[in-house]
Amino acid sequence: MRTFLLLLMLMPLPAEAALEKQEYCDGYTTLDMRVCADIRLLNQRMALRRKLNRRTFNRWDDLTGALCEQSYEPYKEGTIYPLMLSKCSAELNEVLLDHLQGLGERD
Image (cartoon, rainbow, N blue to C red; front, top):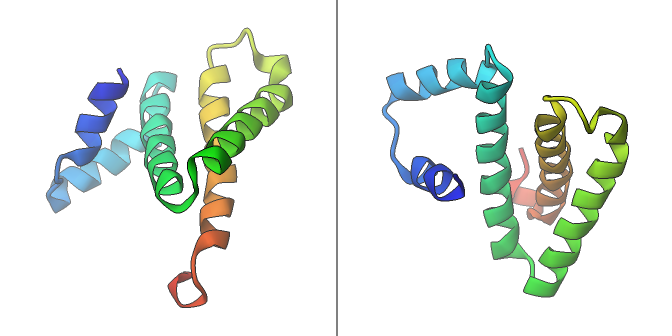
């Protein structure tokens, strides 16, 4: 599954396909939303691997995973749980990536 997501990320998308992808990511089902959240998380993890040394990245990844699991423990048996974990990790990664950017690179 991860290999498929990696290949999907590497494919160039024309403007129409990007629009379709956005509509798909808005999601009608939990599975739709999970695929998009996982792709976002995978992209962020690759960006963090480029910016952090291996030890720091592994510690960050372990810490965010544990924090998100603890935060959403009450939902562990639900079908939405994996989506919640992906989104939680992605939000934390986004904050770190933002702080790792230079002043001229920030949005």
